[in-house]
Length: 327
Image (cartoon, rainbow, N blue to C red; front, side, top):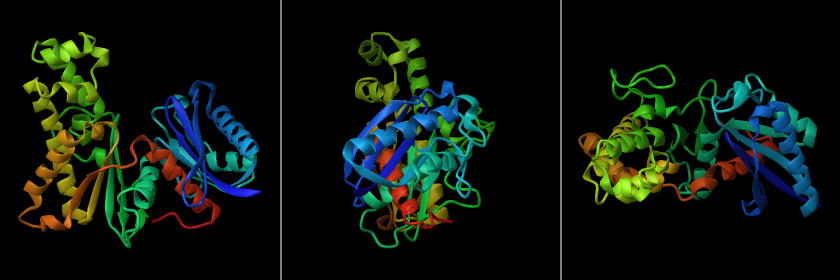
C-alpha cells in the first residue's frame, strides 16, 4: 500500500484537506465545514473521519499529518494555545495527540502562516534555493509572517516568531485587536482597507466603487477596490497608503534580517502589481542608502490560497520523518 502525506489547513469556516505524494503532487484535495460551534474535539474527530475515508477510497496509508492552525500553538507539545477566530478559542487542545490516536501516525501542528511559509520555501519562490533567507508575509483578514534563515524556518522560543502584523507603525494610531495602537494589521489588513473603501463610498468620494458594488457596503473588499482604483482617485490613494505601510514594514524587516526574498501572499496581495509594485518601491526608497537594492527581491506568492494546505503537506513530511521543524 502506498504511503502518502496528509495536509490539513484549519480555518474559521472551513478545513482544507489534501493527500499528497512525497514529492508534493496532490492525490486528492477538498474541504469540510469547520463547525467550530460543535467544539474542538468534535472538529478533530471529523477531520480524522474524513482523512480515514480518503485513505480508504484511494487505498493508501497516511504516513504523517501536518496541521496549520490560525493562532498560537505549542509546537513541542502539539497543543493549540489560542485560536481567536474559532469558538472557545481552542485553549490547550492536544490536537496532535488526538489525531495521532485516531489515525495511528505522527502529527505536527504549526501556525497557519508559518505553515504557508514552508510551502513557499519548498514549492514557491524559494524552491531549489540553497540556504536561502526569506520572509513570507500573509496579508489577509490579519497580517502574519514566517521567517526563513539559511534555509530553515525560524520559530523563536514559543513558535511565535513572525508576528509581523503587530509591529507598531503609528504609535498613536487606531487600536488593534491585540490591544496595541497603530499595528500594521490595523492599517493594512484586508478589513482595514475595505473599511476605508466603505467610508469613501459613503461620503461620495468613490462613485466607481459605488456603481461596481451597487451601493452594497458588504460587497466592498480589496478585489472590488482594486477594480475601482483606476477611476476613483480616492480609492487608489487608499490602496497606496496601505502599500506604503506594508513597504515600511518590509524595509524594517530588511534592515534587521537582510533576507534575499520577501514573498507577499494572502487576499490583499491578490491586488497584484497595484499593491506589490508600490510595496517594493516604498521599501527601496527606505533602504537604498544602506543595503544594495539588487540583493532584495519582493515577489507575489505563486501558491495563492493553496499555500496553507500545501505547507501542511510539507509539515506532514517532517512529521513522518521525525525531522526537526526549526528553531
